[in-house]
Image (cartoon, rainbow, N blue to C red; front, side, top):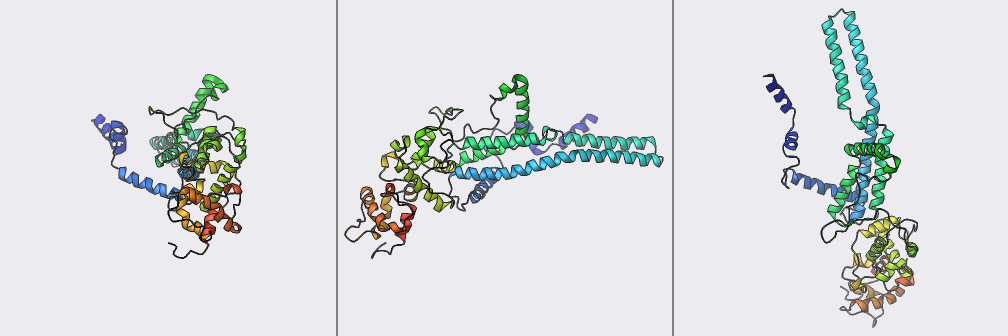
Length: 413
């Protein structure tokens, strides 16, 4: 009878989730009952993070989206660490209060000549309350020094962000996975596991062993290329020093970037293969056209230097590359992103700056249109910000703006 009652009590304390996890873990079916709600919630999350990234319509690349998402997670993590510190500091006060209450209550009972049974019951009850409080709050995070917890979280966040800087995130699933990985850094079980792993490694191998440990949460498979067999290609643990030929186009040449990464970024700025291997003044001009696009579209603080910052490289890396076989179609990032059909999209605007008899026919091809760009740029030169001769045959933000301010031609559609 007693055993039956105890089983009933135990089962009553189990929630539906407890029973499900006990019986089948996370389950054997891909679908689950809360999937529609979860999908809607994730869509809402993506929309709000896009707004934090500065775009109501989510017109941002996934690298920028992840940066905004990590900032949002940092804010939540800081709140959790502050709560954890306050909770840990308050534990001693609560235990002291329970002890003081027990002492005072027993004194009152003795003064009123209560029976020994009553005094014993009160002492047992308050002692049980103290032990219950200790058991509920007994986890490593509450015992270890708060500065240790904070150091682990902040160092892992910094490392994760630094590793992610050289990754290309091109899809929403990759972006969501990156943010879930980053979120895990501030979760209790991750922090406790990191502390335990460090203590165990140190006990087994000393300080030398700590240098060879791998973080629990990393960026190893975020944006990683896949081998034909479907396996993740291994990435080098250390990035070799940046080649000296890239100093001309880097705001911080001392930062270590792999050559394939820099070539990939330049490819997305429409630099041909020769410039990717050895940038020239023409490459710097393409970068300025990209920076002007950034300045007008999303970040007014962007400087037109012709030298890429780490952030500008990360943003560019989230876009598709120019097709090297269509170099005459796109000469820079602005053209690729603004006029997907090529420079033929702006025949009408270019004709506004050309004298009669020199204007382009409606069906002019890419080569013919690009040949007329220098003449059109010369006509509006006083209204241009970018006057570098290297951009003489390219479309840029300021050039198109200047053309759009010219009076329309008769019969212009």
